[in-house]
Image 1 (cartoon, rainbow, N blue to C red):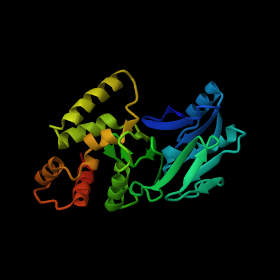
Image 2: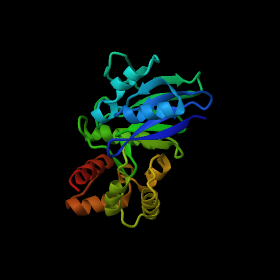
Image 3: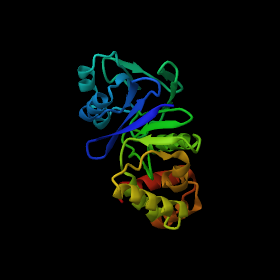
Length: 256
C-alpha cells in the first residue's frame, strides 16, 4: 500500500507525494513550489518517477522546472495540456501504472475550474486539484457551470471511502458558507467541530472522503431540498433542476 505524504506550499497549497511501500520511489502531484518538495526528497532519500499535474495554474506547476533541474532521474510529467517539453499528454479513461504495477491511477476529465483540469484516481485515492474541495469546490474560471456541475457529479459517484486529496486548505472557510446554506445539517455540524480541532492542533483537514463530502458539501447536495429551499429564499425565485441550483450556489459563494 502506497503512502501519501502532505507537503505544504505557499499560504494554503498542498503538494502530494505518493511513496511506494516497497521502494524509495515516489510520484509528485501538483508541485507549485520546488523547495519543500526537494527538502522532503532529501530527508527521505526518495527517487521521483513521475510528476502528475491536474491543471495549468501557476500554484500547481511552478516548481516543476526546478525539480527537474535538481534531480537526475528521468522524470515523466503527465498532464492534459503540453505544459513542459517532457509532458506526456493523458486523456479521459487513460490508466497510468507506477511502482512496477503496484499503483494504478486513472484519468478523469473534470473541466470547469480550467478547461484542461483532470483528476487522477483509483478505488482508494482521488487527486482532484481545484475541482472538489472539502466543503466546497473550485471557482469556475475557464469552463461553464454545467461542466463544473458534471465534473463534481462524476466525482460524487466514486466509492464513499475514496480519500479526497485536494490542493488547498480551504476547509474552514468553505464550512462557514456550507453552514450558512444548511445550518441544521447534523453531519456538517459534527464535521465543523472535527475540522476546528484539527486546525487548532495545526493539522491538515485533508484528506477528506467522498462519503463525507456528500454529507456536508453543499456543491454535492444540489438535489437536497434544504439546499434548494435556501437558494430559492435567497433569490426569490424557483430553481427547477440541480444544475440551476449549482449555478446559483456557485455565484452565491463567489460573492459571499
